[in-house]
Length: 210
Image 1 (cartoon, one colour):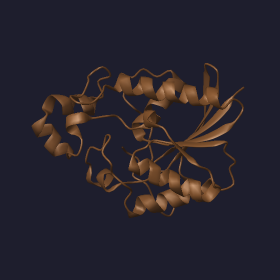
Image 2 (image 1 turned 30 degrees about the horizontal axis):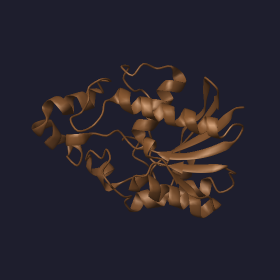
Image 3 (image 1 turned 180 degrees about the horizontal axis):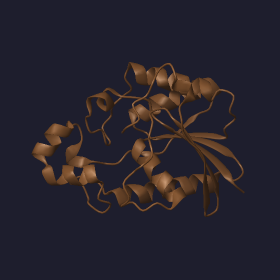
Image 4 (image 1 turned 180 degrees about the vertical axis):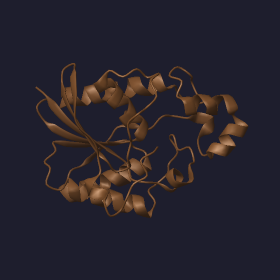
């Protein structure tokens, strides 16, 4: 009854380049991000997915639309796949956030699991909604292959859940824009089949941070 879940991080945005905190802000792809989305869509062109889910934030939906155009699948928007909600920090550069909201920014940078960003959420809250969402989707699609377009924070959560890695442990794995990350889910057993696959981006490039 295993389900194969291919999780794609959205393409690059200008805010990625500028180091601005995105969270739930409606930021779209920049030119390179659009190229990345097209490239990952072509890479997945031969894959046969039974469903295509996406975060409803613009940068994810724009990436998903390229995949949809390639394989003809309808995009199923799923708000639980949204990025970390960062409240008062959203839209600020790292420098501005550090000056205006030092406590919240320090907690954001050090990724304290239970600190709730004002007007936002904690890492643990994000983790719980991300994992619950993917479990629900796997149960909805037994013995099928599905594609999911989401964000760096969500990928971080899924990697940790699959590897039983504590939220407190510093991240030592990459979260590439437009990368392919494949999980095999069979009940409580999660296996990472492949991680951070960006072969399709050799000519375009990717930043590797979120």
